Image 1: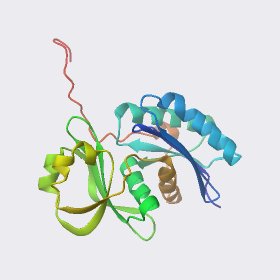
Image 2: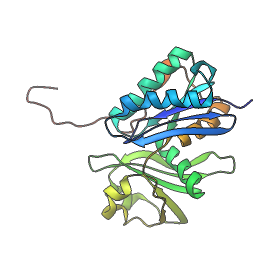
Image 3: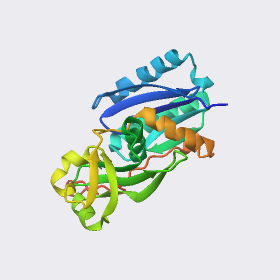
Length: 233
């Protein structure tokens, strides 16, 4: 029996939702900065109508767990938790960096992908992934948040050609172009739910699910240093 999974993601400027049913993926998405809260639920409602399903017919609810915009990640998880609680569904968190790797495979059959999302504060969210025959992505570089200049000194040269994804390549082009990596550009800037739902299928099959109360974000940046007003902590 094939799992029926709903996925949603609001971790970046791109807002998206997707449903996997009978092995087919239905998806909706658009670039909508600061409009995620008004866009995502109508997308979900329309997909359920298109699939002929009710929320309670699903087997799981997947979400982009980050990294990405702090506010965007929180919005996505909060909405996903509300839906999962209401329908008593298990949840599956999927890395947004790995989702972009899956997107590069979907659009360009890329098997070696390097992801860099602009993390602001002169840093990128970074990860390198290689696709195995099973469809699972092997993590070559542990996901991290790092200044692009530090990557130049830490990244080991590889004979492989890496397909690049994410907004970081344009935002920090001068620094990242110094990397000793053979690269090709996929044109893919954002994670999408249609890729999250495919990865969630693998996770669910392996029992990697949690209750709605246990769903949590992955920010990578544990502490953000903001300017504080005098006398405030």
